[in-house]
Amino acid sequence: MMRTVPIKVVLLGDGRVGKTSLVLRYVNATFSEQQTPTIQASYLTKRLNFNGAMVTLAIWDTAGQERFHALGPIYYRDADAALLVYDITDKDSFDRVKSWVKELRKMAPKDIILAIAGNKCDMNSQVDLKDSERYAASIGSSHFNTSAKSNIGIEETFLDIARRVLEQKKALAENVPASTQRKTMVIIDEPPPPPPPSKCCS
Amino acid sequence: MGKQSCIQLGGCCQGKKFHMVTIPLALERRVFGINFFRQDLELVEQIDRDVKRTHPDMDFFSGDSDFSHENQEAMKRALFIFAKLNPGIKYVQGMNEVLAPLYYVFKNDPDRENMVHAEADAFFCFVELLSDVRDNFCKQLDNSAVGVHFTMGQLTALLKKHDEELWRHLDTVSKVNAQFYAFRWITLLLTQEFDFPDILRLWDSLLSNPDGPLEILLRVCCAMLICVRSRLLAGDFTDNLKLLQHFPSVDVHHILKVADEVKDRA
Image (cartoon, rainbow over the protein chains, first blue to last red):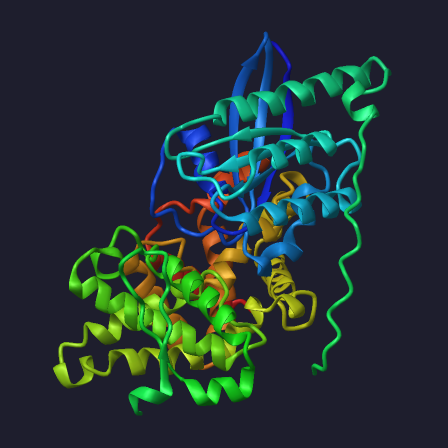
């Protein structure tokens, strides 16, 4: 019997950006406008045949609201990949992606594969696509525009994750540096925030 | 309250529709300063989006009729006022689920005189109920002796005491951490695990318990695990987690009976 490679993927991102819808579209091929907010992390699996290799994606769809963030590490500390989701109609949710990346750098495995999904791409974007792609490249992540509603880009996103995790595992098994992309990864640290305007406040 | 002294906060996410929350303007300005408007607007929008997704299968909560809208507005007001009165917790996703059974029951009171006060009654009971369980919603208390991790630990201990074989299988063999399934059971008082009529039946027991809802809630959670024990014992991590995250339809009367037995053997 062929061996199945397990790949653990964790979805992170602000509340209401569509993480659950993205996964349900991918795993169950369903979509609901009235998706109930996620309170704890949901666990879903999907088996795929990737160029002859059997892969089981174990997907953790986490809760987005800030209150639940303290529960995060249990889901991503041994993850193979993280899919960071933002809502292209909400610029703040893209900034949250950046803070998730910082947290992953501290808490997650060093070689975790990153992918970024700009969700709701069936709507008008408030985020500059070039900016987000540049940012993704700067952290060694791929970037996809997705829409759970119109079923755009989702298959590609997860396939990309599976491909890169498999490549990394293979490279690791052959004991060579994982991937050149990650070897030459550049971490762009953001400039310090400007000093607060001097004013009297409590 | 005069018109001049009030502001009505409107969420813009529905386009043409405004969601009214009336705040005494002068008071708010004095207490919260100028930033309050933006914060409150965000809060109103957040509550609005979640309330509309309460029990999407039930017309009472999520329909498009005037009646559904009236119910949504009442729930939004209750959650907003709670958030303002509890700035340490504010609004946490899922609170709408906890408010829903209360409001539903009061709103369906056959006595019209009672029914017209459904919103106020539901709000009062919601505050009372949350005073027992709100620590579970508070991130700062997560790792304290009243936080949700401690409560989940109590559940695990209870299971160990009453069904050590099942506890060992979950803990050691299939490694299904209670946080993966019981977090939602506990914070939302089982409102996302059962059909609405079953929730009402369970809550009758939860709310009538002289020792408070948490004590019986833990016994019910323990009973839920025991009710599916043979499937759990046969399952691995994935099977068990999926089973517990999508709890199968089990007769709630049976669950309550097992929960009673858990008490007797305590």
